[in-house]
Length: 229
Length: 380
Image (cartoon, rainbow over all chains, first blue to last red; front, side, top):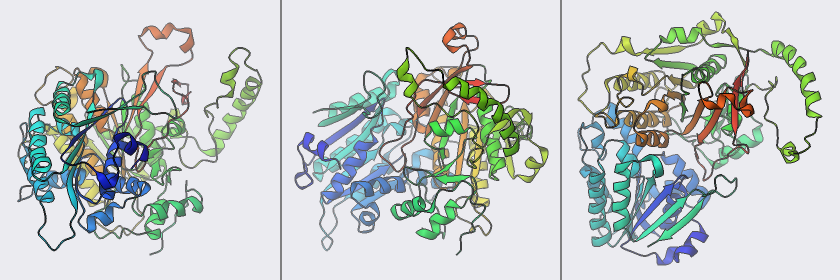
């Protein structure tokens, strides 16, 4: 977690806001540092986190998390973190067909795909536990990232529906937060991505945008962040 | 279990290995099966694989791409478990060269190869690999060059004196490096080396004739076959740790040529809105999943200049780890530009992965051009 970013957003792990959808967006640069920031922030804030990690492996996040001061393995073992590793599950489901509905079932389907199994997985992961367990603070859903779902054949509307359902459950009912990363394609004229970005931008409370520098390349400064709510 | 230390090729000093081991017990990929996510024993076993070395920044295991200049630009080499995407140049003259360098490096260091192509038989591709420059040959040629270089370096720059302070790219072969070899493009690789190496070939016209018994998903027939083939090899030969390897652990180098071209049955090069527009991206995602859970590295060449839909290019770039674009000067107006008269084309590093780290290292120099001399492919 980055203290400067916390100062900018006026939050600390003790007083994290609730019921918010935060959109992370990057253009011409890599915005994954924002994902790492929020992951470590919410883990330190003692929230229950469901992390849908579609592009990198668990150990990547773990190693960066250790550098930022949280241990993902301990969090996963004690139940604070529910981690869906997209890459590994995709390989499993593609080569060895499973009987039970799998969160990434849409990979085997021919048409635009239905994210309902994924939503049910999230719902199951974040539902409030019965008494007798350590009480975590608000549940948080973190998705890295949504643009890759478009690459996998899911339509933009299906992704928007998924986010809407998640927001209804997590933000409204359980007073939790949702954070999602979307890439901004810029000049690449990716219509589906633009639909997704605009739709989410409209629904979200806070948009954090990481942009590359307008003047080109500079060695030490990687970009400029912009926030709007 | 004692780590079978081989000739220790390309390993760094033990100091840096210990630091890496204490910080990350597992490297950037997970392994299935009864593999102990060991601490020191795991890491020292990994380091002892021939032809690899841990990265300076984060202990990530790297392999050489076959071109030491390119390794330097990519931050030391290609990380194991990642994809190197080469955007082909317009007439596909120089990208096969990079492809062959990668495969030749694999043969010289004893890695297993998997070559997939829809155009040429993999056996033919292997015959055309460049021959490695061994130490004694290389020294003889170096001596001639060194005399020339010494006189040049003494000429001071008068007007653009700032540029003198920039480090020169290392263009001469350095004989002491075992990580990354130099190759002579005008000679063919000796037959004994090919026969001593282990390789698997996937030639699309041969494999596509059998019927498919998997339920339809939006992936192209050829891609499904290729994924199954790769997965079989990884599983059977234990690159993912599922069969405990009694012999030396090794790296699988995968090379896929002209992915996305019409020869693979993909129609993204013909129309802008195509039916199977997600085939290539889905394939790349599944490939990434396979690579991250095994000891392998992959090079893919894609004719991006043929792809009509720019959105697909952006998605393909996002799904690959390292992206290098080649732009050759043949047929373009840059050919007559006096600035470029010594060079054959430009090389653009479009993306470098940030694995296990928040930032990536980028080289200081951004304008890079390549030239194909009679024997060497150099990047300056």
